[in-house]
Structures are given as C-alpha cells and as structure tokens.
Picture 1 (cartoon, each protein chain N blue to C red):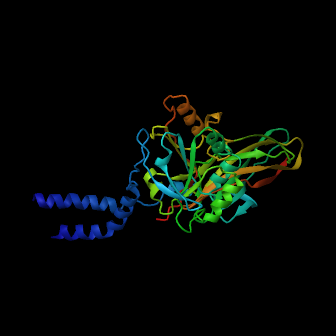
Picture 2: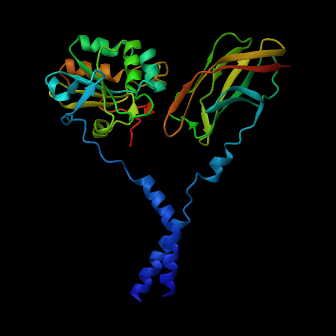
Length: 212
Length: 153
C-alpha cells in the first residue's frame, strides 16, 4: 500500500518532465516524398490564383524550391548566391521550376505582396505557389528555406537537400573549399541519362514558417 | 511478492525520470561567461559583439584579438553558419588570419583574429564580422562593421 502511494506521488511529480522529455523525442510525421520514389502529386495556386498541378509537367525534369522572401538565406541566395539566375538557366533548357511558399497566414514572407515583390526584384522566371496550409510542404518534408527537390523526367524524386555546400547563403564559404551547386549537378546527371550522384544533402536556411 | 517487486521497479524508474535534468549541463552555462572589455562593437536587438580582453602585445609581433558574439533575447548562436571575419583594409594593422569560431554554450561564441601592428602606439583593427543567430522562428544573418582599438607596446 505504501509503495503504491509512493508510486502515485512519483508519477504525479514526474509526469511533466516525462511528457516534456517525450515531446522532445517524438519524431515528426514521416514525409511521403522519398528519394528514389515517385514524387507526390499536388495542385497549388500561383500568385495570380491560377492552379498549377505537378503531374501536368509529366515527362520534364522539375525543380521544387521551398521559398520565403523574408528569409535572410533566401535573400542572400537569390541576391548573390547559388540561386542567382539558376532557375533562368535551367528553364531555358526545358526544366520546370516551381517555388513553393508554405508559410502560414501572417507568418514571415507569406504575404502575397512580398512574394510578388521578390519575383520582380530577383527576376524569377517561374511561378511561386502558395501552400498556406502547409500540406504540400509537410508531404515533402520541407524543413528549410531554401529546400530543394529535383524530380527526373519519369517523375521520380532524385535529389533532396541544400542548394549548395555553402551554408552562408552567399556561395562564399563552401565546405571543402570548392563550391557545388547540387541542383545544377542533379540536372546535369539527368540530362546525361545517368543516376544522380548526390541524392541527399542536409538543407540549411530558415525554418519553413508553417502555420501550425 | 512479485507484485511488490514490480511496483518497486516501477518506482525506481519513476524516480530516475523525475530527477533527469531538463536544462543544459551546468558546465555549458558556465562557459557563457566570457570576459570582455569596453562598449559593444556592434549591437542589435538580437545580438551583440564585444571585444575580448586584449593581452599586452609588442609591435611587430603576431598578436591576437578576440571577438565575442552574444545572442540576445530568445536567439542563440547559429552553429551551422560559417562565421567569418573579413579584413576591409581600412584598419592600420595587418590582419594575419582568423581562428575557427568557437561557441561557449548556446548564447556565446568567440573568434580569434591574429594581427600585427607595425609600430608602437594606438591602432585600429577593422573588418566585417559575418555572423548568424537564430530563434525558434527565424535566423538572422548580419555582417556588422567592426573596429577594435588595439595598442602595441
């Protein structure tokens, strides 16, 4: 009886710390996007309200770029770093490039006006799609901005990770001394008909500003 | 008897989880106390850069200055960022290199800057300190202009 009372008392006092510890250990729900598997289809609206569906680009190489015009890393990358003119170069060769903003309403960079201004400032040749509920971001497991995904012409996800190996966003501090643009490299491999040599890297940047 | 034993085991496990510390180890908190001197070299709401205490250093020898970054409010030092000190050539000492950015806990980090003063007297070490701090919601990347007054004997 005494042991039972002690146990109940202990459980009551330990519960918050146990819950807190468990809360930290709980892994996020696994994304449905996996390298080597078909990229999950989705339909989102662009800044003009037009529907854009991933599967409508079947047969083309596609780049998905998680985007937030308020994120300092996105600003650096598009201003002076590895995203400068990268989309422009590749869309000329028939690659489809889609920027996706999964910021919730009221979150940093989610205002459509900020996205319109960014498209103008950085001369982006591609649509920015609004994923306000965050459902596509979570399906893809997008954690950062920028977070890059490359899909090959068969619809298979072949690269997930950072835009490059310079986590200052400016392409001036490459790890190991040599700058690598991972999206360039993946698209080169696809064009050459070979397996993508680097299929996963750790993304860097701001956290995606999900609404919930 | 078996029931009592099971309860005892559960009780022991319960006490262990209740006493598991939640915060960072005390040693890590103590490391946040890095000594500095003088007013801040650069400051915004979310960070402050200060000069570490400069040891006496003769002219024409390799000396070391230390930059101390403190993350303020709910921000912490962004450990994934490649911190850099870039000589802007406007100082009057020769910068000979920088050390790796070292963090002392979540809120503080230091970078050593090696320099050489050509002659005795007061001089200025100048450059941009590329840094980043983050909180739960955002990361900030900044490149404040830094000027440290040094004195060569």
